[in-house]
Length: 174
Ligand SMILES: [Zn+2]
Image (cartoon, rainbow, N blue to C red; front, top):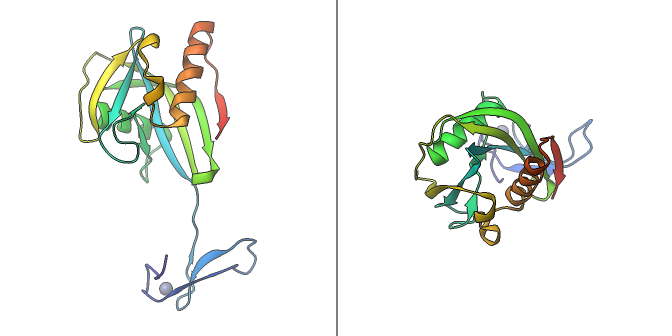
């Protein structure tokens, strides 16, 4: 950040009074720009015994497979974000269930949250963000071509929980 988005003056890096870490601060209007982690909400859409996965048609990790997920928008809940992202990336309509995984990725200041989700029918298809969308059984998951570690771990734990017939909430760190 170089300029204040409020008044266009230069910003400086300093610890505000009463704070304990460096922030960007406007040198003119003294506005403080706090930077905080972002939340990515997504789902594990299931139809019968198969899982819906999406091939990314955008960077990062173009061409790799992922669960539908994306940055939350202001004004929505994590559940609404997960539903919206699932629809935007796969055209699948789901009933969102329990929260399944909370993946902390402090290295890149992100938190990824995945919900269990039942597809209400078998309609889905490619979108501007996904060049290909498909339902896969457990033995068809392309483990070497999964886009993100958070997705890979969420899928592994989902399959393990499903085999054990008991889903629980997973707190994960990356
Ligand atoms: Zn300013």
